[in-house]
Length: 192
Ligand SMILES: [Fe+2]
Ligand SMILES: [Fe+2]
Image (cartoon, rainbow, N blue to C red; front, side, top):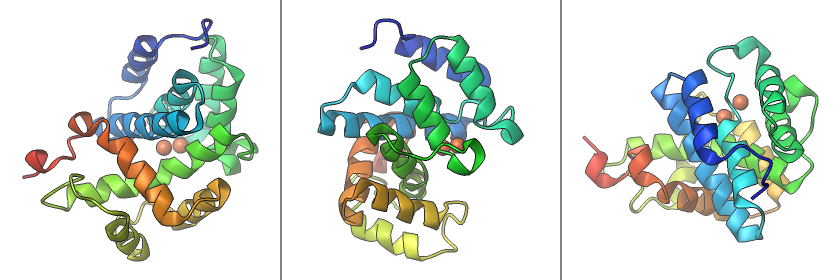
């Protein structure tokens, strides 16, 4: 990993000091896991990529009006690499003016909203993520009343940016989230 970058433990501590909401913490951990999964698929630096996922919503709870600018200023001061800062800026292009261009930017953008939808799907299924398939997620994607906070246009744009089949991208998101299913509490055994 980049030797000059704060390590994961420092990043998690930073997250915990800025974000109190359990749901938002899980969202950030979930996005980290999915972005890491994509880093492994592409042979990219998993720590750099994962850090962008882990910290992308750092200021969302405390400074929603300044998101993500407040986080970017803090992360820059702390010595996070340019690739991390760029990707975090580009996950909110309408706020930052930075469009997703690098592969990491595109992956983070594409995983952000979709991971929220996959998470919501897990919560309403007795079997959670255990046997979740892209088909079920696609069905919920088309049902606009389900997890209405998930921006469907952003999901579509993310798929387009990656240039994958939608079902393929959904499967990758599911696989990434499965890798930390216990942390997210999305397995069958965690269901009420
Ligand atoms: Fe965000
Ligand atoms: Fe997010």
